[in-house]
Image (cartoon, rainbow, N blue to C red):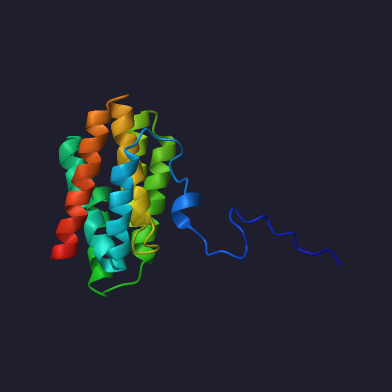
Length: 172
């Protein structure tokens, strides 16, 4: 009888898993590590629902900042996440929209538009797993990396916006 061989863990078995150390949803990005740590400390204080609220506010910021028209799929994400937050449905409708956005991103030939769809997909996936709320911030920074290559001021400004939004959510 053949036994199942488990992949080695990316952390020692006798220590708790550190999601922040092993998450690589975006790959290597130019970032502001100090501000990212500030965001993570605020993220750790937030509930799953507060992170969903952060995601919806961040979605609005992304659409406004990058001057992207509010596509019907993006609006459907808002409705699905709000319905989950209000207890009207489970996470499946939002997660399914995340899949649709990922599929659309695979078909898109414009790297920025594809990355934008993947960023909104992370917001749609927040009801499924809270950590998508952390990953969406890295995706947001990757949008800045694509739109403004090597612009550390733009990266810092984006992290500051993320911190400002999560602080508003935590204080509301």
